[in-house]
Amino acid sequence: MTPRLSEAEFELFSQLINEHVGISFSRTKKGALQRKLTSRLSHLGFESYSAYYQYLVHDKKGGLELRQLINTITVDQTSFFRHAKQFEHLANIILPQIAAHKQTIKKLRIWSAGCSRGQEAYSVAMVVNEVFEGDASWDIKILASDIDTDALKFAYKGLYPVHGVEQVPLEYLNKYFTEGTGGEEGFYLAGEELRNNLLFRRLNFMDPEFPFKSPVDIIFCRNVMIYFDPEVKRKLIDNFFRVLERDGFLCLGASESLIGVDNRFSLVGHAIYQKKG
Image 1 (cartoon, rainbow, N blue to C red):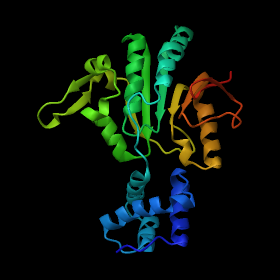
Image 2 (tube, one colour; image 1 turned 30 degrees about the vertical axis):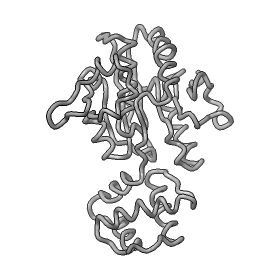
Image 3 (cartoon, helix red, strand yellow; image 1 turned 60 degrees about the vertical axis):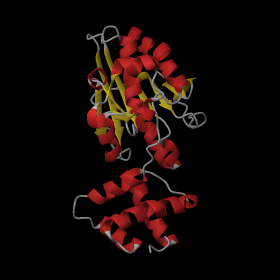
C-alpha cells in the first residue's frame, strides 16, 4: 500500500513541477497531487515517493519520466466551441477586422496555447475556413501547442467519439468531418480541410523564448493561467504581449481576467482582450 504523501514530499514535488512547467499546487490540492503521483509509482513499481523523486531528478533518459508525470498532472477537460460567445466574436468581428486590415499582406497567424486534445484548435480552424471561404490567396497557419504529449498525439490524430462532437454544429460536422467505419465506427475524423492550416507542437510556457518567426494575430489561452502562480502569469502575459501583432487579440477563459492586472490590453468582448497599439 502506497504511503501518504508527507508535507516535505509535497513541497519537493510541488517545487519540481512549478520549476519545470509553472503549475502551482496549493495545499488544498495535496490529495490530487498524491493520486497523480501514485499512478506513476504503481506504473514504475516504486514503493515510496522519495525513491520516485530521486528517479525523476536523476533521470538518465533525458527527462522522459518527468514528461510522463507532466502528462499525468495536466488537465485535458475541453470541448468543441467551448465558450461559444468568443467564437461568435471571432467570426463576426475579429476575423473580418483582420481581413480588412491585412488585404495587402494576407497573412493570418493564430495560436491555440494549451490546446489539450485539439477541440479548440479545430473549432478555430472551422470558423477561419468559414470566414475566408478557402481563399487560397491567404497564408493561414494555426499553431496548436500543449505541454502534454499524450494530448497532442490525440489532437494530431483528430479522431473523436460521437459524444465528443455533440457541440459541433451539424453543418460543420457534415462539412469538416468524416464518419468512421470499421475499427473507427462510432468516431468522427477531422478532414484535411481543417488539418491543412494546423500545426501541432509541444511547447512549455516556462521556455524563455517562444518559437515564433513573425507576430501572432490571435492567441487563445483559455483556462490555463488558473493553474499558475502570479509570477508565472505575469511572465506569460509579458510573452503574449511580445509575440502579439499590434492590435492583436488575446482570448482567455470565462473566469480569467486582465482587468487590474495588465493595462496594456483593452477588454473588447467576452474575456477577449486587444493589445493596445
